[in-house]
Image (tube, rainbow, N blue to C red; front, side, top):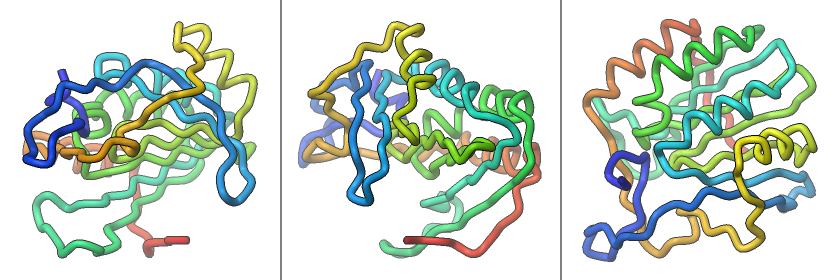
Length: 193
């Protein structure tokens, strides 16, 4: 159900419009010339798809937790948010954190998770619940195929919808604290570019 996701398509009034995120992926080239896969999954499949893609990354892993919205201390629109980083992590430690704090990562729109592998490969989970895999690599495609995720050249993400409602849940506050502690994430200056 959309209301359990990080974000839901809605009407201008804010009422959910019934559109659901489809299971699929497509390849694209970014404006900078990088290749990537764009992956969408309904909320019930999102944790498994995300974890399987992260499992492809070579160790050691780096984890960037980007808090876009501080639900407990909201800031005006346009505030840069906060970045928390940990380096030299094992895949097992990251996998444990993804499983333990899924309520935050997969059902709350306050954050993004950027996980980089030892070969500069990367899996990004954005505020809408869309996954981006850099680069467009056969290893990522093999994982998606193995999970039954179809290639969808006409993939529509929440970013392509006219109106999107984001969900910020009080129960995810404890998960946010827990994730930061479990991975020993250190706050760093926000890097935007």
